[in-house]
Image (cartoon, rainbow, N blue to C red; front, side, top):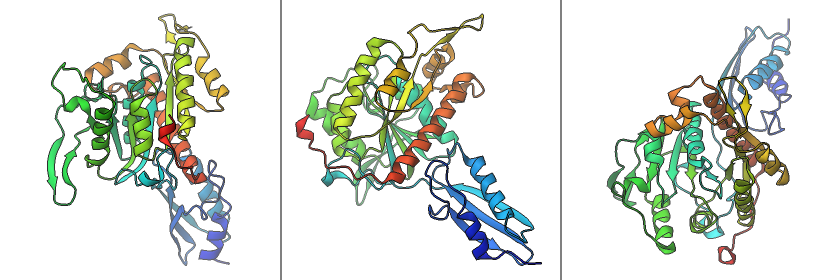
Length: 371
């Protein structure tokens, strides 16, 4: 009876494709620690591009089937692992400032162009969901004038200030629900307003990017303020954004501003990962869905700009309560519909980021002075 060997098993694995990246697992360097034993046993470690991969089980079963097809194989042991890959392009940032934030692999902005659409709610639940999937995650509250993230994440301690012998003074962000958090809310007292002009905003954002020790992160989520102004342009200038998630509600008043935000990101060459339609519907006691803010707006927006509709989130009191309590809904009630949808959203965002990364787009330098 013939026995499998290393080359025959590797050849079989070349027939297994990543469904999103459209390349085989060997070419994508996802096959690690392949061992073929004399008794026909085969062990292998498959390293996915994200721990939040929604196709993890399919890829595992495809690998098992491919190895089993090799004559003489007696058993297959597949270990699934993940390694978030470093982006090879710097979307948006100028050529002189493409070094990114040390230790951070992907930087994802959550934006809207419109206030009151639940962007921060999406940010905290996206970040927490990615952490629950096993990713290393940070959340930067870039809404300088309205920093609500510490409350919504239930952070009870301020960042620590240390003196690094090389980097100088650095903030160590606190952690809540498995997510490292930094916000202007830590640096102001109580209900004091932030009354700053553009240059001061740029300076504090620069501090958040250069004076916060995030450690090693797979994803840093940026919760942006409404609009298309100083904060958005400063961040596009300073750091290489992987992409942005646009949040809207279904009604036209919100869509008008989100369309402007979409066009802004296009001008600064930052990819739109997809659209989240928030407050899509309300389910009454009669179990009927009521579209309080209209219907289909997010889907029309996504079609107009050839983007993906990532999620349609219901209007649910528990989500609001979780934000007020500092317990995102994915933690507060992990089995409810909203929590399930946020976990699916996180997997889709991770999936789209992996696809973006695989394309290795080379963005032209951004002349921020034009805008």
